[in-house]
Image 1 (tube, one colour):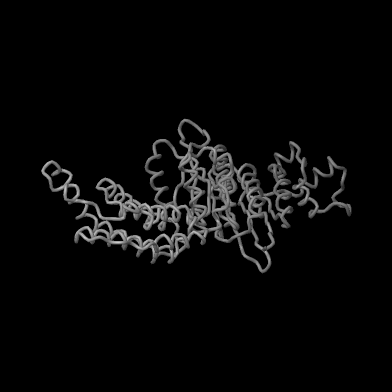
Image 2 (tube, helix red, strand yellow):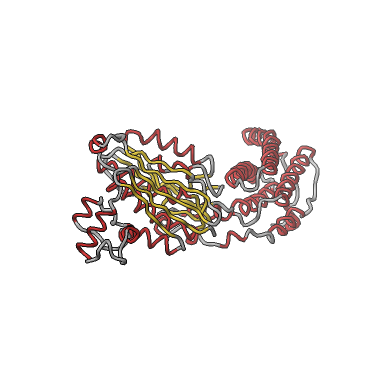
Length: 452
């Protein structure tokens, strides 16, 4: 509705009836409304100034300030409607419409939009002054013209659907308000993550609160959903999380929270994100096997393109769980070998000239390539001294699907299990994987990924 279209309603209300004794209560409410309005308008102006000072990438704070303005103007609109002050109601309604567009991301929250907000607030102030001075006024429609002009400045990011930003298996668990919130956040350019976290029952409240505080440093929680059942002693959650930086702080230490990233909608990823699933699985395997193992990640902040993430995640998952299950010895065996009781599995990432090198190293029993050679002689009829077979071939053989016997599982610690999947995943994105090992000392798998 344009101000010029208000017709006979484009006038100040007759407030004289409110002085009648029968209307004393209403008169008190009106007095409070008129006294409180300047404070509300001041708060709205202050929020606009704070928006001007914000970093444009700080989407969470932007939405928070817009929400504060909306609450104030909505209160003004409701009160103005109750007292028949149509000019204020109509202006407040226009500002609400603008705020809805800004909050949804349909209109970009830039200086032009903030100028329009200030214009609306200024017009409401003019009406209040006119009421106090009992003067008739005519308001220009420049607020409407500004909003109409802003509507051409559409945020194109809003064109994507929620289905493009979150897999259906998670999206279907959200209610309509959460889906709308997700749409608004994505329109603002946030990165979406789905985190799987589990807590012991007796530590649930404290640890969940701590996790929420940490996550809110970089973004906001869209929804908290039940996770997959683990045991009666555990509470598992899935958290839909929107981060306003591409590499939020939680990624570096999510595995230490006993969590993993189930989904991420980004163009590039930290090594830490690919490693999180492997470290999570490794810790759980260590608990199940009763092994004491220290896990370490170095260089997790390095980034790889989206197309390499799944490959590296798959490779690291197999390499770490193999190290836990078959590489690291039980504590009593390690003590007999004069090793530290706690085993070590370390993932390191290093930036090279044209590639990224990712290594998985353990200090376990190592791979006996001589045993592999012996197995090849016995089962495949290949002689170790022939030109067809050497120790380099033995190293390659552990990546071959199906190369497993009871003896190799015992003597060689089952290093062939799952390694073919690791090799295939890495090679599918143009990478290579090599292994170095020394019996009794440990094993290192080296993955080389090309830099995009």
